[in-house]
Image 1 (spheres, rainbow, N blue to C red):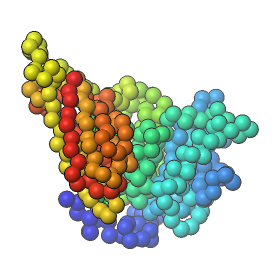
Image 2: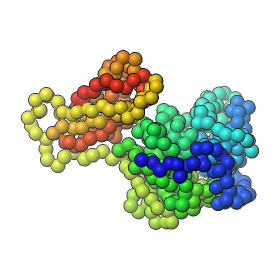
Image 3: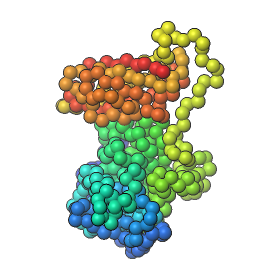
Image 4: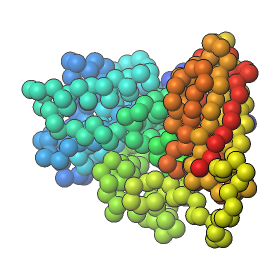
Length: 401
């Protein structure tokens, strides 16, 4: 159960309290470090075709394609320069970083603005005559945000174009939103301001609820909620975020060593580090090793390895629901599984996580992902989905391989 009322009363109600917290911690933002510390001096611009956004990019576009980082600001502020030093630093290392909100804009933003940023970058990359034509790596997309902006990032992290999520001093506000955690299938990283950070309890609660097998990193630097975004080049948060994006979006394994292993770079620093399912090469979680004893030569009576599937409704509201299906191997190990799910009349699947589905209504099948198909005897995993209609009355059966 989340401790919400005390922790996030200001964040949920209005932007002003969070802004006040940040200003109290950091004072007036430091002067911008024009260019950043990377090899491609960077600054920001706007585009008539992407209203109410701020685009940080290398001043001279390099020959290498730019991965995409879309950003939600602290307090869901519509000032696209709110974390300008931080985003300029990232851009200077060869990224296209797009913040919600116009430069020095006012008001608040929505998660849909992050999707607009991705849409725009993809369109510009394919538009002949654009300065970005064939200059953007649209296969590598990070969605990230600070504080309230982290909630915006969570909301769109299931976009199939997103390849990693970054949550900076943020955490879900309500247990009813935990479905956003259950649907995660791509690597995620948390960068939090330590126990004095107002978002710390929520971030740690989210960390404990991540899907089994999901590659995840948690780093805490004891600087409080305000972070170091306003320092020159975004300070320590700017340095570490850039390394994370270089690893996840550019395949830089040297940068990846900052986060992976018992002797990781941040493990030997002032950061407090936790890791889940991290490998250096491609970030895919390790599979469960096969049993040390050979499988029986006599097949089970059904002719295939056995498994069970248990369906349960996690949340139900007028017009929609969230459900979970627990898959458990029988007396022999599995290399894969497939669940046949029969939904009640009028119900359909709108999004699904930790499985690969075929169909959206009636009788559908859900197969394992690459990272959760191999189960030892008696071991369990799960997948979940959000649906429309009523989730009551569905049935599930499992076939193993």
